[in-house]
Length: 417
Image (cartoon, rainbow, N blue to C red; front, side, top):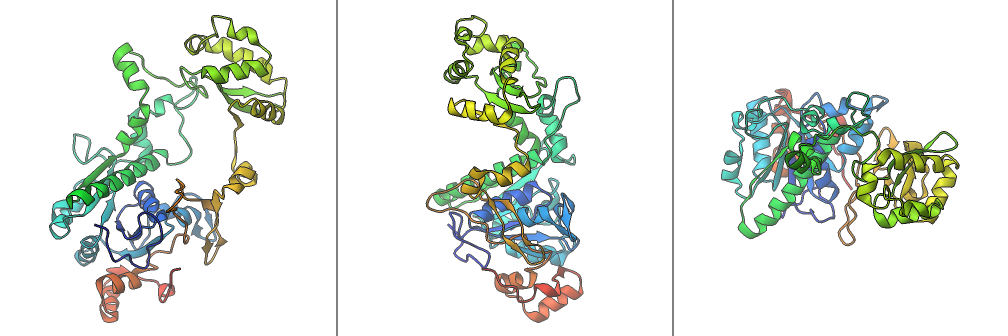
């Protein structure tokens, strides 16, 4: 059931031949589509003339968004005004030729525009619609404005993030948006597999708060069965000890994870503390979890005898999982990142090479690839509407004059590798 017309934007990879229309904005929707584009799908992003909000997030260089260079990569980008009926008619025609559509408007928006799943599926019964929202497509909260970090607060994850003597912290990236986009992409691929058997598409409902809540897995039965409410534990992983940050002699920190019994035995061996295997407070994982403060004090006393580099060597030789806390400078200079080519730098016409994370996961036979950095607003409007919908130059000029579409002069004649 693959779309046979791969289009100019498609590439090699397991999703080669699939056409995806991205109507999403900010992070969750664009990330979901970026995952598919990385693995060969022909992704056409529909953007307003003023640009996706993600273009104003993060850092800028010379007025260009570095974030957009990555999250909008591998996509053909068109600018069509969905607030106008003629714009919606254009996008509907694209959706009727697509395999997958991704949107993250407030629930009901597509229906008000006459572009709900039932309407689109009448012309394209195999269509898969990925709907990303804050609280899901139904339920009493469905019409609330959803934002990743707000839904993260509702999920319970914020309550367990940070130090116990401070307000809840957050990860300094749009973590819940990424989790939800990842679930959306997984759902789309599962729906595509089902379509091979049935010939029918379906709706993938990926809610921000639910995606984040699913990561609270160990704490859910603990409350239901024991009444335990998970709280912030700093750098610890509750119930798995030792598993936290430990100080070094040069006033730095190393994270050691040695909660499992086999690794714990290697740790106490390198510490030259075989007595810790006999002490009933520390002899088993359950016992150690009940005596975390005492266990961590013993390990801390040992780590403070050595520098960070010395501990990395000692623990590495003993096969005890441990690491410094990497910052971006550490990552760029790390030999493993380099050997695995985890950072790639596609060319931007104004910025030159722009570094970004390589494709994840790695597939041995049909790997994904970063083919180009994120395009400008409307850069592919003319070529897409000509190639995919057969619009003439006269029709494009008329639509541009009515401000239905946006196509910068610099976009004319742009070719993709």
